[in-house]
Length: 163
Image (cartoon, rainbow, N blue to C red; front, side, top):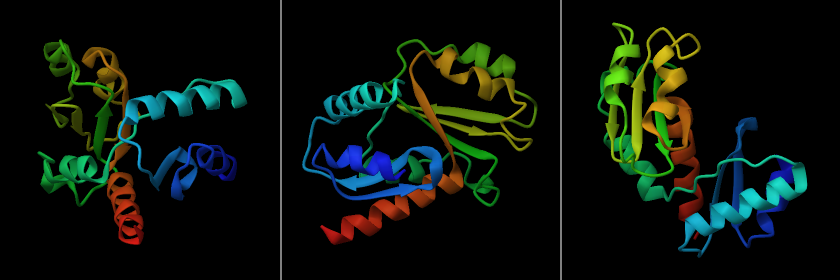
């Protein structure tokens, strides 16, 4: 993660903090075009390390909105079973019928704009719904469990206070 911080500093980012070895990073910046910045960072990672990651940059407000709109608040007490999928764009034609057909009886999901919520009490490792959701939504997605989403939000709030 130290190498990632050094790479990100080249883009003029400040107060860079990483969360575990997952590629989750919070930072401050004055950039408005996050799509262009994400593409630039992805290209630099590909040039430097040989792989082309899909990068999404969310503002603190977007993260807090996703948290506040959680349709399954009763599942927050089991953060490992509640997942939030941040989509690269709002899906134009998500195949919700196929998603529903893959859903186990105790699984629930909901798509709200560019956020896909999944409650999988038995875990996502064996969930066919989790395994196929990105493909059936038709847009790139990065998925985090509830604990990680809340921790990233807390880190973002901490650095927001520094600015």
